Length: 273
Image (cartoon, rainbow, N blue to C red; front, top):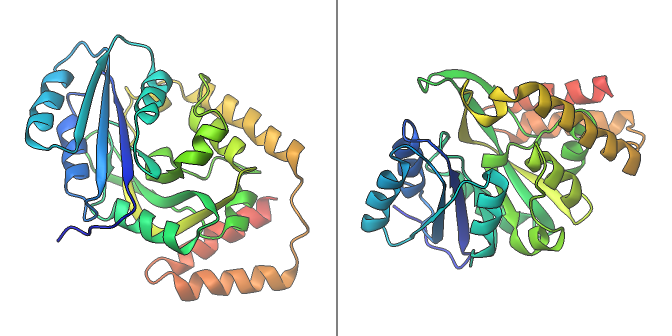
């Protein structure tokens, strides 16, 4: 049963030559248990049958807003969609990935419990081009632990987030840079808190033809630049033993199924720092 709430969400999906996975991706959004959303799909100059697929779904679900434009890149497509968004929060979804049915519901619930948060994020499963499971990537729950992780890596998966729209616009949205999501997170760290749902809500496809993997070295290099910017802005605070013990117990006791794994992620970040 779909859950209706006063919090309006704008789901944004840039599309470029994604016909192989697009139906699966759109279906996963339309199955959401949380129904108060608009779904803005921007076809960024695809040369395959992506537009035909989008038109089919737009004809059968009034929540879909279909936009077609000449190819300008994923950043321009996402920013255009968000400029039209009427929701209080923005949620990204990529055209070759899959959202769990409870993705938006979990994100909205977490946002209600963390009113100071400008970014809410959940954990992901990584799948291959055949949609087969590879591994799980967990996002810490607490703001401080997420900030700690930013000194080492990009801990926030783009497609598993809810972004406060007012904060997104205040920092100027996505900049036209590579690894634009990590760049955005670094800007938003100064705007408010980050919070994790403690649930797995998204399947990210490790697609050899996808943008991230096809430009993997460039993506890693740019993320290193953004991580250096985090270090320049704030060296991590001294982390005392009591905090480590209390946080370890928090993850073990409050994450019903994956508490030990969350603790391992937290402890790994602390030891690397």
